[in-house]
Amino acid sequence: MTDIKYSINKHIGTLSESAKGWKKELNLISWNDREPKYDIREWSPEREKMGKGVTLSK
Image 1: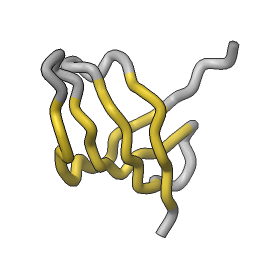
Image 2: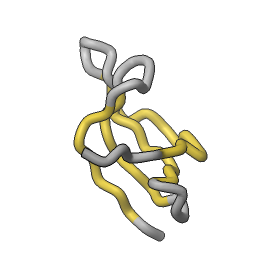
Image 3: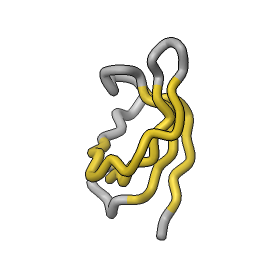
């Protein structure tokens, strides 16, 4: 399985938080060194794991 590189360029806001500490966030993320896009997905408390999400371009 190929590693996916990502860089959170800007944290825009937190939309919700679960009882286990996972947060659904809106961020501006660069995937695999490409142009940053808006991204909505859940992140673990230390941002070491992520859930499925939606990526949107301008």
